[in-house]
Length: 592
Image 1 (cartoon, helix red, strand yellow):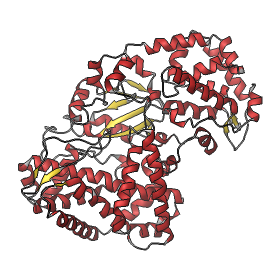
Image 2 (cartoon, helix red, strand yellow):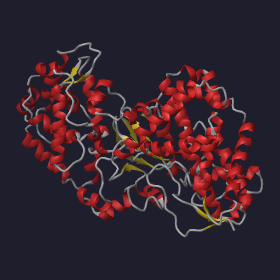
Image 3 (spheres, one colour):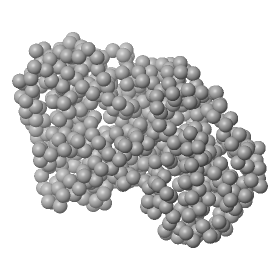
Image 4 (cartoon, one colour):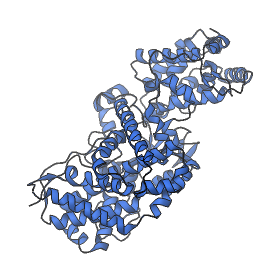
């Protein structure tokens, strides 16, 4: 089939949705192919080849550089062909030939034991095709047999840096894990890396959840900025590096969602509907859109009466403590720190308190989908929760509420936002107010139970408790990691970061950096210098940081006033799965 013939069949869908097989690096290349189509309605296989020839840090580049082929001449021929077909169509989509090629690449990946389509699979599929671009590749020395030999050599590569430097395409960001790892030791065996080497160097070590700070100390000493061997991403643990990555405009949030595809292409690839809400949240936006959304919501936050909020917090806290009074033992998270933030933010928004459990349930189902390590099941559950949450808010908005922050938002600049952005960011307020504040209060109670001397110091007065909350935020940061994607090529600590590379900024690690904090491994509520970044930094600094701190101060004070002799009723703790949030799964306490 020629390129011109393929363009006539423009809306061919793949036999089954292919989105779940596309890791971020492959998505980036597929987006670049659209740019190289230069306005044509049908994006063709030769546009994809041009994107692969120019894709930095990819499996395809590894194969190309080791193939011995005449790449410069090939690139000129393909670029010339692409330029001769420039157009100005609005209805951009992938051609039938390209969709068929993607499906063939998926079959090739599966035959090689991979659950994802890498750029190397795309390159090998193109070379084996009967399309004109396939014949052109073979004429220039890119034969299927030669590429297969290069691919096998790559799989046998023993050097960690060389092996993963071009394997970042398999990184998992807000999408199914690629590849799905059956077990840590199995992954080590498949990667051909000694278990002891991986066990010391990867954030996927099973002991990380229990004690991440041991890993941070090792990384700070031996690998302060390097590629993780199992999470193909750069990992930063020094305070100055984390701060730089968070605030520098060359690192962005929007690419996480891979929202650069036209709507028709997203439908062709079978992208989940959950992505309609995530890109609309300010958390995943870059300026100028982030600035526009944040400023509209910030005005409402600044107008909130803190005395009214404080009185509502105290009333809600007392209600929960009264409910716990008759219990011989209780789970602090289930009975207190879990429901409290949702009840508070629900009241602040002007929504019925009786709806708080349902809002918390939706939040719990959506949060895993916006973590670093999300599965296809996570996305499916998040999609359903998003739809239900959105319908709920649509109904409330149709009632034209006048009370609370929701009414204030409707009366302010936020009302001028597109409805999707307005609803998505109202969701974000409810979700953020629930998850991170629950972690903050839970971690605070745990630390003060384990350190009676620090608890006594914290409970002296309001100022002491305020300082204690800052130390809790530093010592057990509710959010341990935040991610960024390089928007352009950047050099950091001598490492070349290419456009599209994922960088994980270790907030929890930075908050224990000995170059910034004296005796950082000691929990000290009387610490005077405490420049922690638990709420982020720069333009993405948490909008509700002040409210979260106030809520934690009141909650911890009232809890220990009611239960001055409380004690832990469990010898060991299980921590919630994932890299991002730091919070126990349960916190069983004897009130005594």
